[in-house]
Amino acid sequence: MPASSEEIREGLSILFENFWIIRETDKDAYHQLLRIENDLKRVIQRNFGLRLIVHAKFIKLEKIPFESQDWMGITAFNEPMDYALFACAMAYTEDKSEGAAFLINELIDELDLFYPERGLLDWTNFNHRKSLVRVLNVMTDMQLIDTIEGKTDDFATSESNEVLYKVSPYSKYFMRSYPEDITQFQDWRELVQMEKERADDETSTIAFRRLMMEPAILRTEENDRLFYYLRNQQQYISAFFEKNTPYTFELTKDVAMLTLEERLKQQTYFPMLKSADESLLQLAEMVRTSDYAADAYGCIHLSKNQWLALIGQHATQNRQGWSKEYRESVDKKLAKLILENGIKWRFFEEDGDGNVTIFPTFARNTGRYPQDFLQKLLEENDLSEEEFDGDEGDSSEQNE
Image (cartoon, rainbow, N blue to C red):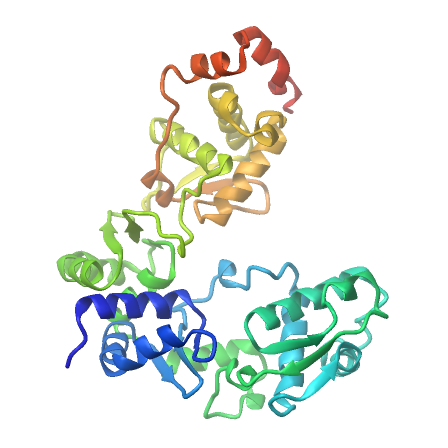
């Protein structure tokens, strides 16, 4: 019996929102997917050009992006060393049998041998120990290893703190397998090129994959063919996503994206319920009503001084309702905070000289305080407008 559209919708949501579904820890989801395995494989292969792996112990959708981007990394990692240590630790566990136990000090002896830069690791260095702690916590969270005794975080305090682990049954399945001998490649770029040559490069699968795996697709000189497809197949694409996912397909001249009409707890979306995102909404309203000129692809380019001036104007109009950190920041610091948050959401980009590009995705948002907001705020805090201004200080005079 073919799967219903609701079953496909739930199945795709589970697969795209999880790295893998492990049978032992999530039996209901595993068997739910197993029941409609063939239907899911057909939809995933036809529309996304991706591979669904069904194993006796887990089910995994190989989510290979069309193009890797900086925000696609592991969110718990902070430094390049984290990724290098993670790769080395995975190489170490792959050489061990399932259930094999190892001590953290046995691991670090091997990491010294695996690490690409010999002699660089120094386990008396707090930052190096902290990097390994992040790696081991991620491996534990992803069920690649299990902790038998001790606490991983204690290793950050002292290299003498010992922890005992064992290799999980899933450790050997984390890395992708390749039919080729990857040691033949000189660097990662050759591996990526091989992937592109082997991948299904149909415009339709590229479009569906990018829509599902990226916050938005921006029109560029290089992807005019893709936007031609999106415009001509807009009705079909909209119908697919409305039927099989909780998303709605939106297409403008310069942006294609999937949006949510309702907040779902398992999703990361903009705006989150925090003051930093509210500030971005208010800034979007200012940019929308400004006279900044956009380029042929809907991007606005501001010099460093123009960006600072915009944030100064933004603060003058809206800072009364912000969080304490934002409200009390001088304009230069505020400009940095807002820029960092906007870059995280892929609304902005900064070059090496401090010039800022505002992407057309930012224009999709807007927000403003109601006209009586300040009066209500003063009444709630039993303050006059002069008292409120005095408390927050005049940050504009400190802006350079």
